[in-house]
Length: 131
Image (cartoon, rainbow, N blue to C red; front, side, top):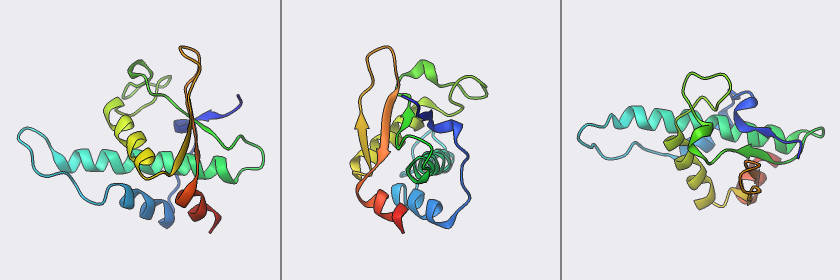
């Protein structure tokens, strides 16, 4: 498959991306002892914007697959690493699950131990992209 990992796309600075990310995670979680909920919320929003940007770029490009690779295994993630996904694994799974809950992505399961899971925009998300 010739699709790219979501973090290889640029994170777009566009109002519709901000709006979609805010819809995914409208507010921070309730305060919790020992957890900076504002930081967690900020990390979710940042990652959601990057994933939404990659889905949009894949969806609208005539030269790319409509799918984006989305690693779901912990070893694929490491903050401050050039070869790994530079986000928190925990936040990445939260964003992935939220996209699925909203029915904004269609999931193509990866071949075990060989490929990442592939996702593509669908439903209300693809309709927003069409606008």
